Structures are given as structure tokens and as C-alpha cells.
Length: 283
Image (cartoon, rainbow, N blue to C red):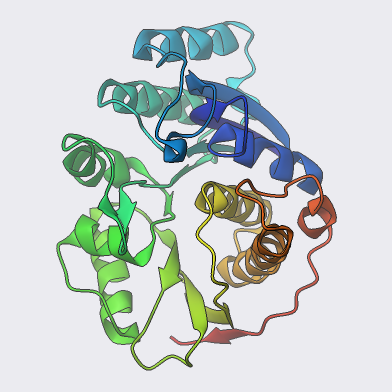
């Protein structure tokens, strides 16, 4: 599979394309990366250097690919963190051009806005832009539970409200979703869940919740799910494999006491997931 990944890039550490490209390659996918920023390190350090890429540069790169007559071989477009509001138009233009050449290609949008603990950490212009313009063009969305609630302006807590929020998001345009960081009040203590939903049903998986919050783990999750879902269009199977790989990655990072993801050390978990967690159908 060929995956066009339009995301940020850092030289040190693993977020955006620096987190997504290698796991996808270890899964066996060809990844065409377009970087929307070129930073020294992720912004979680509080200081960084490097430029934001103008949206026109992103469009120029896509134009170059179109001139090579290769956009028809793209199977999926993946987008993540959008540093500025102008990047959205460039991403949607890329999606439209890919789908013109390959109508079977899918667009996977990770609508990065924030999380329940920190709230929104993007500029005020980004959340409404994602909700009103970007998400309606997506085939698959990968929000966390907090972001899902914002997208549909609903309180999201238990399983029923989470499923209802996914259905409301599908009314905007997408047909499949992976919801991360699901924390239901009635879940077992010390656990966290992920929920995958498509037209065939809904599936939930539970894992231990490790005492670590690591930058880039969501980017890897979105990438892994994109790779697995693009291969088989099977949300349950994609959920199982993604959960296995991401848990092993986060556990290895936690055990090492590292601030950066241990991507290289856990690469076998991407290529050969252990499939150690049960996926339960909940609808």
C-alpha cells in the first residue's frame, strides 16, 4: 500500500511524520511524507526552532507528484496536527486530487486538538475548521474521546454516549472511526480503552493504563490504524493489531524512562503484533 502522510516533522524525537513513517514502513507500506513543519523537536519541550511550511509548498509537492502521474497509486492519505489554518486547504486539495486519480483511496484524518487533561492546545481557528471543513471530507477519523466530544458538541462519557457521538460524527461525512483514550466511568480501575466503529459494527478493547503521557503516541496510533484499515477495511482487525503494537511501544518507553518513544527498539511490534488483547463487539 502507498500512504501519503501530510504531517509535522521533527529532527529530534518522534511526533508527526517522525512518529508515523517508520512504523508504517515496518508494516510493509510505502510512505510518501509531506512535512508541514520542520522543527528541531516537538513543542512539548517548550522551546524549538525551525520553520512552518507554507501551504503553497505543500501544494507544490502534490503538484509534482501529480506531474509524475503517481497519485493514482496512493491508497490512503493521512493527516495529523495542523499548525496553521491554511494547511487545511492544502490537505483537502491533496485528498481531492488523489481521489480524482484513485476513487478507491481513503482519507484518514486525525483531528488533533487536545485532550481531556490539557484541554485544547491548538490555535482557536483550528477546532472549528476541523469540525466544519476537514472532518466532513474524511472517510476515517481518529479522535480521542475529548476531541470526539468537541466535533459533535456532545458530552461524551459512557459507552452509549461515545457510540452516539460517533454516529453524530458519521453524519458529518466519515464512515469509520477509531476513538482513543476512552475512559468510561464503569471501566475497570487502572485501564483505558479504544473503540473502533464502522458500518459493520463497533468494537472495544481494554488495556492496562500505564502511568505515562508521551508525545507522539497518538500519531503512531493513527498511522498504525491507517495501515491496517487500508489493507483490509476491517475495523475490528485493525483495532486489535493497532492496540497490541501501541501498548508494546508505550510500555517499552515507560520501562526505559524515556521522554521520547522507543520506536526503533519496538519495531517488531509493528511488523508482527502479538495480538494480546481481546476485542469485544459492543454493537
